[in-house]
Every structure is written in structure tokens, then in C-alpha cells.
Amino acid sequence: MLELDLLNLVEKIQNRKAEAQTIELKAAHEGCPTKLYDTLSSFSNQDDGGIIIFGLDEQQDYSAVGVYDVQDLIKHVAEQCNQMHPKVRAMFTICDIEGKHVVSAEIPSMDITDRPCYYEGKGRNRGSYIRVGEADEPMTEYEIYSYEAFRRKYEDETHPVERADINDLDESRVTSYITTLKDGKPNLSQMPDSRILDLMSIVREGKPTLAGAMLFCPYPQAFFPQLGIIAARQLSDEIPANTDGERFQDNERIEGPLPDQLRDAMYFIRRNMRTKTSISPQTGERSDVPEYPIAAIREIVLNALIHRDYSIHTQGKPIRLRFLSDRLVISNPGGLYGRLTLDQLGHVQPDTRNPVIATTMEVLKLTENRHSGIPTIRRLMSEAGLPEPLFENRHGEFRVTLFASSAHESPNGADSTDKMDTAPTTRLDAATKRQAVLEFCSTPRTRNQIAEHLGINSTTYAISRYVQPLVQEGLLRLSLPDKPSSRNQTYQAVQ
Image 1 (cartoon, rainbow, N blue to C red):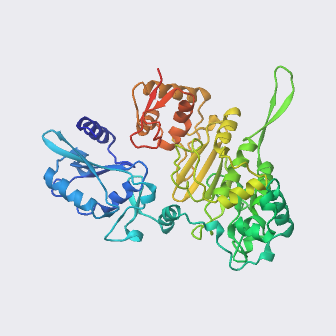
Image 2 (tube, helix red, strand yellow):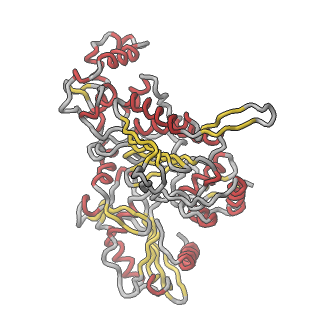
Image 3 (cartoon, rainbow, N blue to C red):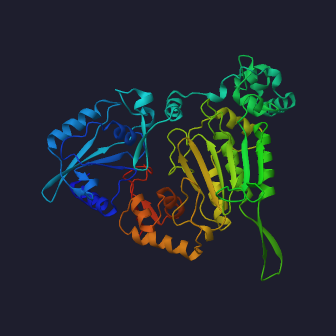
């Protein structure tokens, strides 16, 4: 960071009077803070890293109070960085504000294979932190495990189910699968079926694997009671009981093997899908338009079933499908896997968390397994004249939200409680905001700057809804096209 950049950042913080996801303030005018470990850990463990600014005091209206001694501060901060595992390599910048020294320490993001970064004095389980808004919170056991699982390539789906027996597999389903699998594969066709099941990780050590049970057991919930889908159309977004004590217009627990869950989920969706009748002014013909593109929802449900986390940490958590007044929300346990970030979603080939399930579903002709689901969802929503889908990755959960109409767009995005401002806006508002982004980006702008300019609290929503479509249309360009998730990424209008 250049000195001028630090001056501009301080001015922005003072105007906003708040910290941020990537900004932490420390007064440090009376000495070096002695416990920076939580922030060093949380910034290192997020994709955008973060910046600690010393010499600004929140208690004095964010005024510059200066640091006690620049060289001693840098020395002690560096010492704390060296007590992290892996060691943190901070980059320092110094500027003068009204004769007082303000110092920034840029904390780079750790590579995902090195996460979690933690304070050695507390150990991995107690010294790993994650940034939540303006706070540093201890990582959960599952969040720590998810990094370990990717680094060591754990295969949770291939663990044998101890209580199950090979006879628990549906013989007709297994026979059909093997027959399809052998088609066009002469070498595989010569092998015994038992050997094929072992090679394909459907059976291991004489017992069905988790993948085998979820794909071919008639009722895998006997072994994993929560590995299903909870589907509901709520009477209210707040889920209050009505006068009869009812909370849902429709509510169903969807169980069975994965192919059956997909089928039954689509039954539920079609049953609860609202339709709008349209009369053509030219022909007078009537047509029914569904609330959401059915094929887009199928892709989301399919992705949830295939790519959810099946580890022991999430086996008590079902997939959730909720129809609300103006949107459909589908969430599954397990955030994005591996190096994939939200910015890259649908643009790069991701690591696959459950390759056995993904490959078997392809053999069963339920999916193409070509990583085309996200682009298809976006395209279908666009063709239906509906807002861009919102993808969120947070706290071990991946969530997709489809909005029923741009007339119900939330100026603040979707927050963590799914409450939305339902003040109606028009399609012209959306077009105006697109134009506002292009005009604002006549010079390079960051994600946070764009969201703030649009008056949208959720940066993720602002980028997904307005910026990414402009990038895809070639109207905005990235300063770092090879690093779309970089915290230094900026967007500029193409002249």
C-alpha cells in the first residue's frame, strides 16, 4: 500500500465511522496492543486478507491519535506475526496525519492449503479465528475440519457404514447401475460385479459406503436420519403461527436414496409453484408462466444433493428448501469446497467434494457432471426476466436464493436472517443502477466502493446482482483477471 492509499483509506474510515470485514482499528498511542492474534488469524483465514490500522481511536470519534513509537510498534507486531502458524508476513505502511504517525499492517490471505492460520500459544482448535463483520470469532470444529479435509483429501463419502450390510442395497438398482456402467467398457465388463462395486467405492470392506448407501439403499435414513431434505412453503417470512397455530402452507420431509430425493423434491416444487397467467395482446392466447424456471431449481437441488458435505460434522443437518413470499431459498451443509470462491463460481472448474456420488449420478443419467449447473441457472433466470440468483457461502453453508421478480428486489440485499425490504422498485431502477455502476467505474473501483455507491449493505449481493453481469457482457473489466477474488481487485468500465 502506498502512503497516499493509506491516507485515502483513513479518510474513508473517518467518514464512515466504522470498521469493516477487512479493516481493524487499534489506537496504539499508549503502547502496542498485546493480543493481535485473533485478528491476525481471522484476516489470514479469509480470501481478501485484511488491514490493521494503528493510530486511529474509535473512542475519540475515529480521530488520528498517532502511535507511541513507529519502529517499536512494527517490531512488536512482527513478533506477534511470528507466533502464528504459519507465520504471518505483514506489510507495513506509514503516513502522517496532522503531525501524528498512523501505521497500517496489511495481512495477506493464507493459501487454503495452509489454513487455518492460528496462534501457536493456543493451538489449532482454540487459536483459529474467522472474521464475521467487524468481529473475530473462534472457528467451529467443523470450519477447522473443512480445511483439513481439503488439504488431506478426506473421502467422507467412501467410509463404510458399519451398521449396514451389502444386502441392504437394492439389488435391482445396483444391477441397473452396473449394466449401464459396463456399457462400452469391454475391460470393465469382464470383471465380477462385486469387484466393480469395490472399485467404484459403492462397497468397501464388504459393507456399503456412505455413497453406496445414499445412492442404492431403499431407506438410507435408517443409518443417517438427517440426510434428507426439509421442504416448506411458509405462510410468512418470519414463520409466525397463524390463528390456527399453523406455520406452513405445505411442509414435507423428503427422504430415500438420492435419486428419489431429487424426484420427490421436484414433486414438492411443482406442487407449490405459483403461476402467472398471461394473455398475448397479438394472438389472445393464454399462457401460464411459472414463478421460477423449473429447470433452474432442479439444477440447484441436484447440486445440493451431490455437493453437500457428508462428513460426520454435518450428518445431523438436512438440506433446506423454503418458498418465501418473494423468493426461494435452498441451502445445504458445507460451504464451497477447496479453492473455489464465489467470484469464480460458474467460471472455473471446481474441485469436487464427492466424486463418487457425482460420477454415479452421471452414470444414472441424472446429471451431466460437466460443471454447467451454475451457468445454466443464471441463463434460465435471465431468460425468464428474473433477477440474478444470489449465491452465498458462509459458516459451513452454501445458499442459493432465487427472486420471484425484480419488483421485489431488496436495496439492501438478502441479510443473514432472510428478511428483505419489500419496498417495490421497478425494472427501471435496476437499469438505472447498472448505468450508475458503469458511470461510477469510469475510474477503477473496489467491491466495497461499488456496494457503498449503490447503497447496498451486502457487497456479495451488489457484485452478484449488478457487477458480474456487466463483466460477463464485457462492459466492465477486472484489474486482476487471473485473480478474480483478490482483495486488490478493482472494476473499470470499458471505454
